[in-house]
Amino acid sequence: MSLAELDRLLGSFAQRGVDLGLDRSLTVLERLGNPQNQIPIVHIAGTNGKGSTCAFVDTALRANGYRVGRYTSPHLISWCERLQLNGQQVSSDRLLEAVQTVLAAADGIDLTPFELLTAAVWLVLADSDLDIVVIETGLGGRLDATNVVAQPLVTAITSIGHDHQAVLGPTLGAIAAEKAGIIKSRCPVVVGPLLPEARTVIRNRAEQLQALMIAIEPATVIESGLWQSQGLTYQSGLIGDVQRINSAIAIAILRQLQQQGWGLQDAAIAQGLADTDWPGRLQWLDYQGRRLLIDGAHNPEAAIALRQAVDQLLPNQSITWLIGMLRAKDAQAVLATLLRSGDRCIAIPVPDHDCWSSEELQTWAAAQGAIASTAADWAEGLAIAQTYPEAIVFCGSLYLLGDFLQKVTKTV
Image 1 (cartoon, helix red, strand yellow):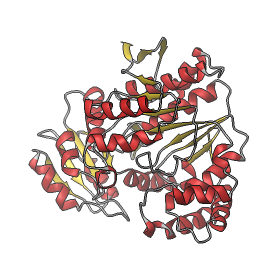
Image 2 (cartoon, one colour):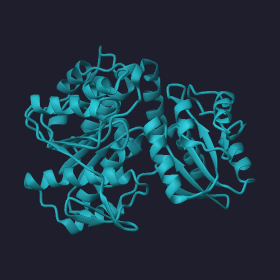
Image 3 (spheres, helix red, strand yellow):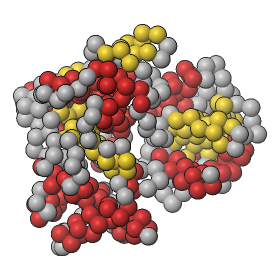
């Protein structure tokens, strides 16, 4: 029942929506004794790749014997997924208790759902006997509820792309300025490959704060399945060429920790990178006798990464795409990137969310030369897709994949 109560409590705050700012969070955390300052953290922002990078860093640190907390978003099935304590998701009872404690402390303060949850997470992390915590920003960086720690060990910005423009700004420079808000004075910041407009903003902010900026290039492919970056040769537990960037960023973060005195051995780092798992992102799974590739590609840059992965994994093949997307996302750009003439596209809605209609997606898909159709939901869409010979890629919203995974899990 605690999970249902969590859903009820956090769901009741959903109408509050996104309202970026730190004052509410800082006031509540002060009332709670500032738990966010009681444990060392690595703070990671970015349009895409930040969750995968968090997973790489977390797993590599644990492979070296450290007790690690990890906070990411969104979740696929349960709120508890967002908070991992040494490789295990937090119990619903424990998270619910922390949420209730925050609510009591927040009397008179109108928290957003993410602020409420994040404050509760800080409470749990501070009381979990951990050595270090890896934190992913929720939205942006400068005014994100995770940006309440004065001096992280390392920060990182994985990528800057076109997403959440209504909140973060219309240009790459504006978006970069928001994400650069996690950079702290004299704290090293690891940066992935960025377009010049974004890179200039990040570099200027790092220079202002005398923060060492470490610019990372993708890992080099040594041979099939074997990569090399910063003196480390390794295999990646996550598939897709984009992970050459995310894993290299993770290695750079770990190298900075080594320089700060953390006892990290290369062999254990490599083992951690190989063992990393990140559900819902370029993940193969079996469904009713067919193999599916699922991925939460929900913005143009993520669509580019997915298309590149499909070209590598399924070369010279037509694809049956099953796609649903939130209305806040640039669905036309995503479809233009993913679809090829001769592909099939089955458009579906995202359950319980404001999404593009199946008919709108169908129209845009047909304009790309795809054989486009609609289905009432993902179950019908997959049933239709299984009648075709092409490989099936199920993608779009992480909320859509979460609904699928939750219901499939219940039937297994």
